[in-house]
Amino acid sequence: KNEVEQSPQNLTAQEGEFITINCSYSVGISALHWLQQHPGGGIVSLFMLSSGKKKHGRLIATINIQEKHSSLHITASHPRDSAVYICAVYNTDKLIFGTGTRLQVFP
Amino acid sequence: EAQVTQNPRYLITVTGKKLTVTCSQNMNHEYMSWYRQDPGLGLRQIYYSMNVEVTDKGDVPEGYKVSRKEKRNFPLILESPSPNQTSLYFCASSPGPSRTDTQYFGPGTRLTVL
Image: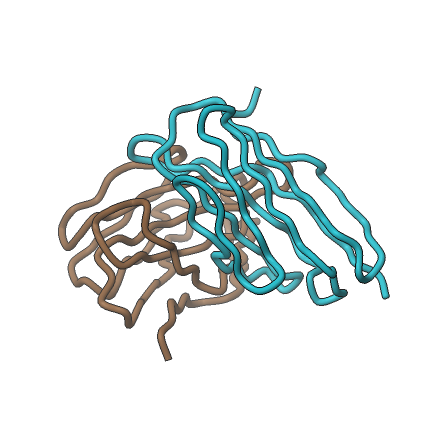
């Protein structure tokens, strides 16, 4: 079993829909990252969380340390949000990645 | 512009021919790292460096070497590449020694070993 699990693996949505991507982990962590990988391959860091909730534009990330779970929400989704979203956790001295959620938003 | 650069972006080589992928950052970051990304496996850490002359193994270090002689550069060396090292490689850096800082990723290097 992977130490970081993401669901769903693939997600399609219509423009304007509210999107939720989930990340569960089984190890102790000091922080959790949400990353976005564009179709061209580039990776951008969206959020780094150690507790609570963060918001940036239409993106909201939450983390529940007790339940070892984080969610990434996209409000009013747009085709330009189409990408792979990757959850990664810091465990002691290494970064452990989930395998990603591929999101496609259609107009 | 603050950025992490990698070269080359694409490389096709043959088994056993030594190669180096360069990584450079212009943000004066202390922490740098190399990852490989494979379908179904996600990103995995190869090596990381907390500062100049300080490097440590990640999850998949076999077949790779790194060096950190200057703060800005962190090259990845494949002494004798093999086909199972065909992958997409990313270099990343972050501001401080804390591994919880936001990481900045390079554009990636797609390597094919025949």
